[in-house]
Image 1 (cartoon, rainbow, N blue to C red):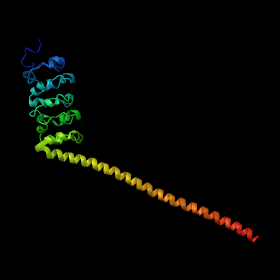
Image 2: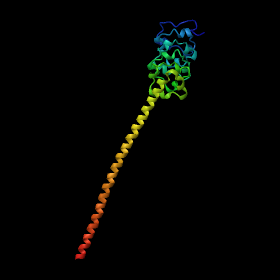
Image 3: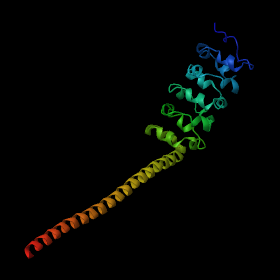
Image 4: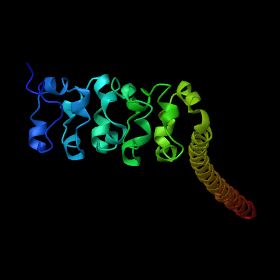
Length: 214
């Protein structure tokens, strides 16, 4: 029998070290009641290895407000197989710091029923890079908050396009400057070359004339 089987809730006095001493197999055995008895400090004491052993059912057992207790680093530890387990009631409790810590793999593992759960206040928390990570088939699930997400997508795309235009314009100007310099170089070179040839021809003519006169 697991040592935590006979308690309905976790003792409130459990320290960070005691929480971290739980083996992954014990973590995976936590019941809904035990999970919902976790306090903020106890949740934030969970290690990456322990979090990776939470089952989908256990993740769904967290009260919505408990989801906000996870640190941004802890949120990034949930695997792509665990992310789909978060419920539409838990999603609105994700904080700005947590959302901005979501990886491309996590974002692309979000399922249809989760995406509409993000509130209009949460959408601006996504970075431009994160917005780009949403697959085309995911964006159709934004429904009422589709406009903010599309606006941000357009803004992000516009920034990228403007940067591209800026770079191209800079290259074009440099190219034009080089072409202008090259043109004047050729003109000057031609002038000196022509002058030199003419001078040689003139000197040669003078020499011949002098010989004729002699």
